[in-house]
Length: 99
Image 1: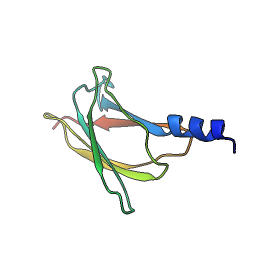
Image 2 (image 1 turned 180 degrees about the vertical axis):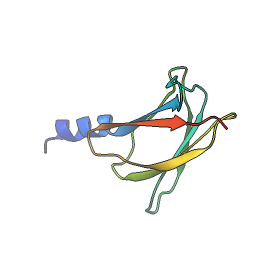
Image 3 (image 1 turned 90 degrees about the vertical axis):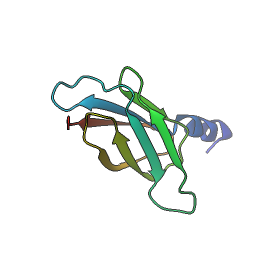
Image 4 (image 1 turned 60 degrees about the vertical axis):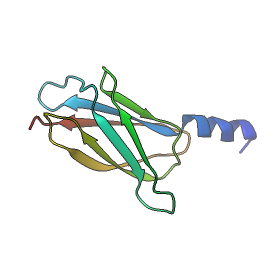
């Protein structure tokens, strides 16, 4: 692997979380998205808010498995896992049900 490839992988490694309403499919803005490595010694949480398009970008991330939780008033809290691969911007769509 060349240095250029290595740097390219570091710049592309992360996740785009797209949060939408379960019924309508409309984007859910201002949802709190928390991501944390599933295991290891560095279990730092990263918290972001979705934009008006329902998107939150976590970048850069280490290429490992992460737990996530999404919360916003008026919707049920959703949690799960996603896997980040080196050199890839993983895309995850999460559908929230109104509470």
